[in-house]
Image 1 (tube, chains in turn purple, yellow):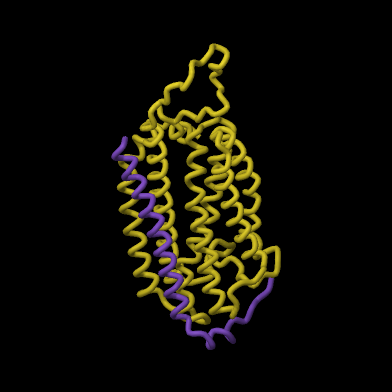
Image 2: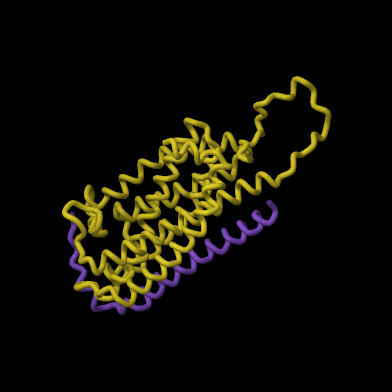
Length: 48
Length: 260
C-alpha cells in the first residue's frame, strides 16, 4: 500500500474554488437530471 | 424474492409507487438539504487537508452510488434473464443513466479533490482506472439498448453484458488493497470501523442516504413513465392482411408486454 504524504501539496493550492466547483457541478447535474425526469414523468402522467 | 416477484407485476408496482413516491421525494429533499448544511457549515475541517475534505461529502456518496446502482442493475438483469420479468429488464435499463451520472460525478469530483491534495487532475492508478472502466461499461450498456430494435433481444444481450461487467465492482472496491494506488485505502467501510470521527462520517452518511433516496425516487418515476407510455401507445392496425402462417405469437419485433 502506498502512503502518500499530501501535506506538501496542501499549502500550495487554495481549495475553495475546487470545493465550490465540486458542489456546484454535483448540484447542477443531479438537479438537471431530476428536472428532465420530472418533465417526462409529467408528460406521461397527463397522457395516461 | 417474493417481494421482487410481486414488484415484477406492473399493476402491483404502480400501487406501490403511488404512495411511496412522495415519501421518497420528501426524504430526498430533507436528507440532501440537511446533509449539505451539516457538511458545509457544521462538520469540522480535516487535520491534514483542511477545507478540501469538504469534497468528501459529494465525492464519496457519488462513488458509492455508482457501484450500488450497478449492483442493482446486475441483480435486476439476472432476474430479468432467468425469470423473464420484463419490468426487471426495464428497471436495469432505466437505472443505467442514473448510475452513469453518479460515476461521472465521482470521477469529476475526485479529479477536483485530487488536484488539491495530490497536485494532479488524474492518475492511471487502479481505483481511478477501474472507475473509468465502469463509466465505459455504463455507456456500452446504454448503447446496446439503443442500437438493437428488438427489445426482447436487447434486454437479453444487455443483461449478459451487465452481469459480465459486474466483475468490475469488486475490482473497484478492492483495488486500493491489492495494488499500490495514489488513491487512499478505504476509510469508512473497513475492518475496525471508520477512520474518521463521527462529526465527519455522520454528515457523510446523511448525504449518502440522500443520494440513495434520490436514486430510488428517480427510478420509480422512470418506471412509472415507461409503464404509462406503453399503455398510451395505440395498437397499430395491420397495414396488410395477415395470413395464418404469419401470426406467430413470437414475432421477432414483439415488444415485451408490461402494460397489464
